[in-house]
Amino acid sequence: MGSEAHSPEKSRIVFGIESSCDETAVALVRTDRTVLAEQIASQEAEHAPYGGVVPEIAARAHAERLAPMIEGVFADAGLTLADIDAIAATAGPGLIGGVMVGLVSGKALAMAADKPLIAVNHLEGHALSPRLADAELGFPYLLLLVSGGHCQILAVEGIGHYRRLATTIDDALGEAFDKTAKILGLGYPGGPAVEKLALDGDPGAVPLPRPLKGSKEPHFSFAGLKSAVLRAYDTGQHAAADIAASFQRAAIECLVDRLEHALRGEGSFPALVVAGGVAANKAVRGALEQLAASHDMRFVAPPLALCTDNAAMIAWAGCERLIAEGTDFRGDPLDLKARPRWPLDPEAEMVRGAGVKA
Image (cartoon, rainbow, N blue to C red; front, side, top):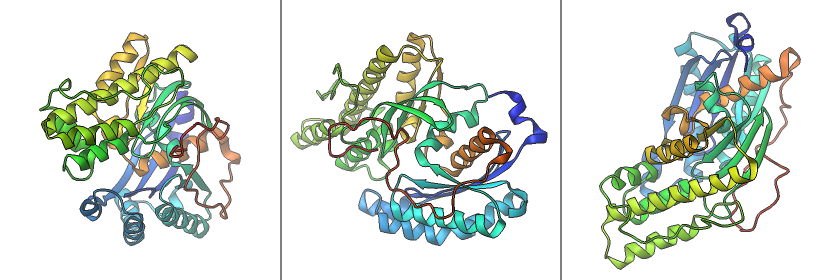
């Protein structure tokens, strides 16, 4: 993106709301990539007793927290609704109750302030988040989007132009990390706990499968790896740290192999980008950085704060829409519905597996 599009005199401000899972988040972001203010409220304590996110609890927490957070973030920035140019809210995919809380709040603010509403695909927020932190990242780039609900490889060709090259046929990698943590008694959230424990383990100690590694089809599969972790744990023959380390190595090898498959089919891209919650894992980042270097590609990963669910990425996706569509932009209709499933590439072919995360 050229510097002219982000010149200070042309900068505009977007207010963003994120509520698709278990983080309630709001942010004010300017089109020159300045995050003016943001707030995030975690629900870890509420969901920890259950070992995972309970949708009803999540939706209620969003409803209780969002209004005071909206007031607070505007106070932090010293702004009012009259000072902003648009309101961006996650409209899906995600837990439908939580998505509805955020989207309805966004609609109400847009109507009250007579500002355009921008309905943001949560996955697009992740896909564009590296561009918020890196002004040099241009289109196209190869994206590994890897989180608790999604594991996809996408060719990001422009705003609103995403071509899915691979997806999971069953479980996402973040889900597999959380399940492994639950098996090992590490609590919730599982990903950081498994990563920490793996540092003390032997990654070659436990023989675990690498589902679809070397396969001619492009997709991911992690259900079998989860099951293998459970079987290894049930034998009582392996230390928890060794299981964690062996699981993490197997998962990373699957990621690298599937990305290699995509590159063989598509050719090189200027950059390999990773986004989503699992992108915070240092071992995953290290392996992907090596892969990018071996293909003479630039490796880009957003700051850790932009990896997990946050509203700055939603506001930035709104900024990207404003910039791309120009001064005639009128926003999305206020009667649009929340979408529990919303693929970035609606033209992508269906793949086998009942558990596919769209």
